[in-house]
Image (tube, rainbow, N blue to C red; front, side):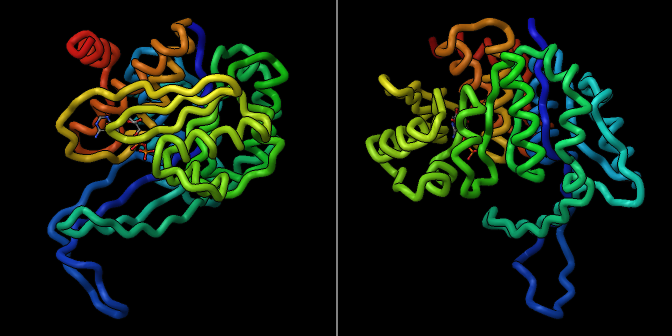
Length: 306
Ligand code: ADP
């Protein structure tokens, strides 16, 4: 299998379960709490490793205790950490998450060291990027660094996957640098300013990204699966039927399954099936990284619903 390179964010997610969202000035006692490693980049790298793929993470952690904890987690999961930076005098990225009983959340995010992922870091990683088969990135770091990494991967003929999350309007040039872009419905709407509720609307929106340079758009559509759109074809690839309990990081799990499938040389439809299965299984368990399946578990679901 070819190597996968994930270029992106690393956050520590601190979640407190509260009876209701607190008011200004109020001190609210929670009913429980959890501390997990997260951030889209770290989630995708851990999910690739869980699926058994060789994966290298390029990203920035601070020199705080959280950074040490995240580093150790990645090592334990089998992620190649030789491209990680431990930045001095800055905290690691951190998300403070309040969750109410209805499941809704409020998040305050401090990007910390994620903001120090610069174009120079991407250039310093050129040799590591060039030896990979698949390069995957998201939008939680400075855009100029994201684009520089994509340009390097693209120039070396590495398959580039952009997960445009969290979505923001993007320059046209970025789409010409990616082979596959994987927005969910909300992200596709923000990227294009076009409606994406129905499949027909989503096809039109995806085609507008193709007009801006994207080769293949995979629109993630929750339990329904994924809509594949190129310049001359469009079709739904259905998802798997599961009992979903927590959809956190379903998108990250999907992207990891896709990258692993491509790195393993699968045809695009088979890679998408592995992605759908990986995303589906992640929704049947609580949390982000703890919910990510092994390759055997994903293959078993594919076989069971063939
Ligand atoms: P995001 O997490 O980015 O919002 P989605 O919710 O569309 O993205 O989930 C990503 C993928 O995970 C879907 O395309 C699908 O393959 C899988 N998935 C998500 N929710 C479910 C579900 N309830 N049942 C089965 N598969 C799901």
